Length: 247
Ligand code: PEP
Image (cartoon, rainbow, N blue to C red):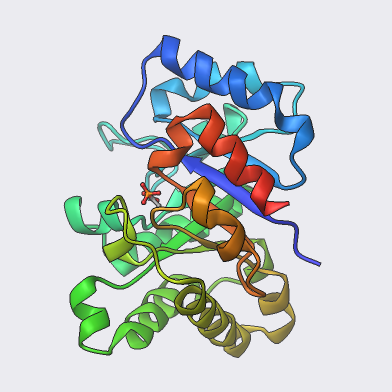
């Protein structure tokens, strides 16, 4: 039985004060949630969010990390440092990192490996663009992203996948529950080619304009094990409602 996970990707948002209010509001209601919850603020807010979640079941995660453990890499944040701050999760390969910061499948594979070596859980994001969906090549695109990042991974069951169709991120367009379920089942089949037993244990989150109004129907699908939430995770009421819909 896979335990659902809902992770909030706060992206480049928040001040120390607003992050405090958001975190406290979520922590206060976390006892009413039956899923795992992770908050992913910007790196410089992780320490503050770690203090505010300590003693609760709410986990913290980073939005990215370096592909190196230490050295002359100005501006980067090492997975070792994230672990030290109390992170459990690291989002990797988000479509914004792929498109705006030119991250390649090879960069992402390297990060997945380092994150796992540190005992952290990667949330590996995959998903097709609108153009790729319209061309009918969305399964090939997602399979390539998955295999490039995971082919050499021995701890596959530790990995969390987030299926995020790029056309649904921040656009208000959501994949229908049927479209999402079909892609999640496809992803589990691709994982099963690497390890059938691990594929059954891997949590596959859906991301892309999840809101309180559509969360329940999405999370009711057999292969959807929670969500990666962008915009709606910046509002306590909406995020709590989504978490409650997951478990
Ligand atoms: C995201 O950025 O991971 C995301 C899913 O964003 P939104 O929920 O705003 O579409």
